[in-house]
Length: 275
Image (cartoon, rainbow, N blue to C red; front, side, top):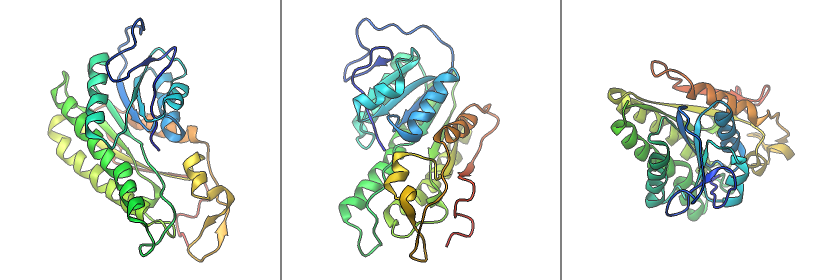
């Protein structure tokens, strides 16, 4: 999901113009990370984990109050209101990041939506287009902006981590739009990693299954997820903080190492042998 920010008494806040007048953020030399969809769920958990680990974190999304809550008045948090499907707003996000922190070391492409359940002959075109825009095009736009910064900064290089899904490997029934975007995310990840090699830019993907978030609840997993045989089953979940730890592990690797693909699921989730 995508969130944003407007007012935050402790973390520095960006609107359309620049940092809030009178705000003061102490100097810090930690790496700089941009996290999209940072107002809830996995994005919120990752942003907080990175802040706890000493990252300077730029939280992006559409909901002001949600991003302010995610930032928790942390002095190393910068919140920037952004619709990551809009190219001009994405550029403003990275301009704000460079203006405040001077560089971009890590981008976590996390913004995503789960459209209404539908098979291919039932899917509404507007739902399909929204899924493509939020789940895929936004990752392309943010990656493009991040790569431009990573190539130009000194020292150059950086890391992009894409939030895929178990659906990048095996779909749930009636999830054609979501599944198509997540399969496409894998291609985007591999292409970015390949093209970034000569610039010291790596890209990896984490595919998470059943971390306990509002997005997962919207898919009906908690009340009984639709199975391939037509039945419904309450599936196991795991704490979203564990997913954040996995992303942090990827983010903290030295430039000489990269996790190209990580699959993290709830123990006992019907994924291996699904159906």
